[in-house]
Image (cartoon, rainbow, N blue to C red; front, side):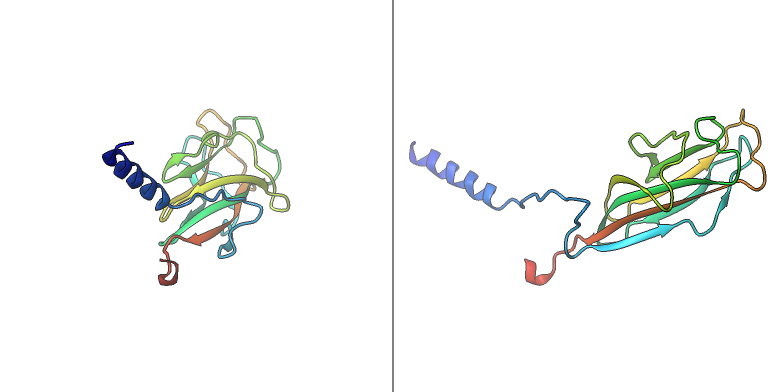
Length: 166
């Protein structure tokens, strides 16, 4: 290696050494500095009229300076005549208004409040997760006593380095 190549080689090694290391996150054991959260819809949400705009079942915004990981989710129907797979109710999980992978057109409930489903949804600072429900125009109008609700569990972690970590 000539002297010029040695200098370039040393600069590459120095640059690689200064890159932050990637630590995979295990959702079963979040980082020690993580803060757990549980968000539940404020009340049972009545389904909208057939063909009307979707209703928001729950909405969660990641706090400033934080990242969040949603680890469990439940989206449930409350009342008689379970609408699963009938096409009479469509639930959506939206991240900043766009459907999350595989959760943009759900025809069945996910888990229960007692046994929520394990999920992995990574969210950045100020990201908004919204769960909506709608009744398609071709579906029969839902009875007055039928509602929906949702709950998410997860954790947040600061993305701001403390002075001692610099």
